[in-house]
Length: 316
Image (cartoon, rainbow, N blue to C red; front, side):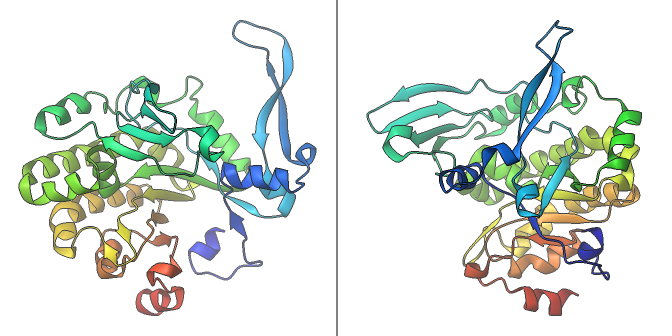
């Protein structure tokens, strides 16, 4: 997998997949044998117990089909707001349910009985937790990189090093959120994009804190594990079919310097595979994305005009 991402010779072309929950449910309905993919392990039977008991740990669909889990071992660093907002239903009608989400956004979803599974149906976001400097200052209190809850209670670096040295079931991956994705999720895309023009000081302040937060929150893991982390998965979703949601000029002025400092931190610690996750057509800003230190792009959305051969020819 690592050789393929580095464009080196491989003994076999890796087949890597991720399976969404609704896909797995559909597989079950079509006859996927649950008993062959269920993962069961023995653990203590609840808090305070000394009794070992079998526990359901999930499913391993990849092993059944013979493919590799794209992100098999996720580095357990929590980069979300702490404390979380309490996810709760705040209103409902015969067709919809309104929720406060864990990131603080107010979302409207179809009721499950009206459409079946709800996981892959995009909610309608009605409001977002950040709208100005005052709400940003409030939200920033939840983005303390030193909060001890960002790492598991059993965080023991020697133990994690040993586990990662032995891990063979897929890649070891650090998940982070990019500068565009961070702002778009917490302000909403229209509000966030307009703020580049109407409130550039807020954009710069948010990006600067997110750079600081990303480096400091992941520092313990990155500096201890180094290239045992196979790659960084950097979520952005900053484009749609006709192009990016921000111009190359805005990307270069507001985001590029922060990207470079974060990728520089990873590179300094021998982590060089940094994959940006963005749908849509990112070609107009791809030169800047590469200058930022991003070394991979997932996915390449064919319907948006992203052609793997063109990208390979232009960028090697």
